[in-house]
Length: 397
Image 1 (cartoon, rainbow, N blue to C red):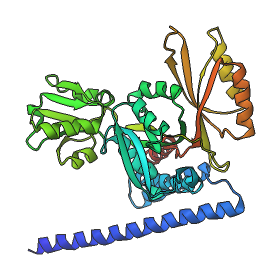
Image 2 (image 1 turned 45 degrees about the vertical axis):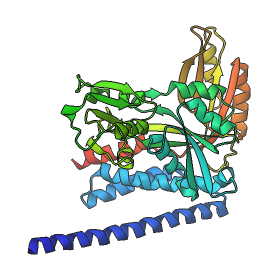
Image 3 (image 1 turned 135 degrees about the vertical axis):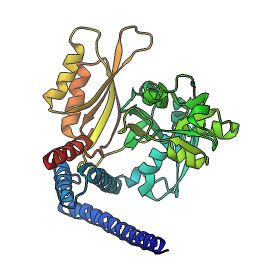
Image 4 (image 1 turned 90 degrees about the horizontal axis):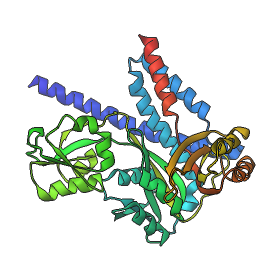
């Protein structure tokens, strides 16, 4: 009896600590808002990436004094700083997200419970508006909903750290009239989901989005007698096994989708890489003017002449203006065998004089050029963060 009482006391202490943590997180959030207001008053840049890296380094080292694992600390404070960055950017983005109502309509490929819906909830959380999802089966249908005014924004997955670029969305960006006005990088945690009596040994068919299957192919290889049936969306695959109710059926989806449909999680963390992220683009009918004090990213698509050195000449323009290319992706031009379009993300605000000059020069070296959008980059350097944590652990050992 005394052991039970002792356990109850421990749990009460845990609840008390959790309550204090919530209060401290709220206090820190308010301080982040105060920092933004102070920077505005003194006309300082809103983001200070050097300060972010220095802060993380100091916290990781301080955590060692309390016997806390460096990677554990880095994950927690990555999310805290990520939230702070959201606050800073949203302070200047309210106009484009203000549709005069308390509701935001977001078109997604799939249904609620999908990764697209969860990424959208994360991105739009701080605008304090009700989210209504408009579910479509195809990415082009998602774009059309926004183009024709039935939705305010589209949430489109563009790339994954395990399976790479999503070709349909790259191709869609070339033809849509929408503009990219934001991005969200969402951690994907794939699980194997089934009905209450489903086990690994009973499985005959696993429903999965083809991207999810690609990201979990090593796990699927351990189930050679199980067939994979592709679905348009991870949450839809869970809905399917919920409606069928067969113990032979399973699905690859998120924990949230399993809970949404009240199904059992058979196995967690089944992706090839534990750090599995999908980058989503937020698109709108309106273009966005990004405040010059916020680090910005510009995306474009271009085609160069089909001659030797044409691509090299185009890319040399970025070196000329000392502008960093964050991503370069090629896609074939339909109807023109062996010719390609190139999609680029680069650091810079389209309204800055330097980027305007770059685009003018780039036009000389391309036969087609389309700016897809300019938007704030909210990236807290995850690579730098992991490096700091790893370095701290090595130093500790």
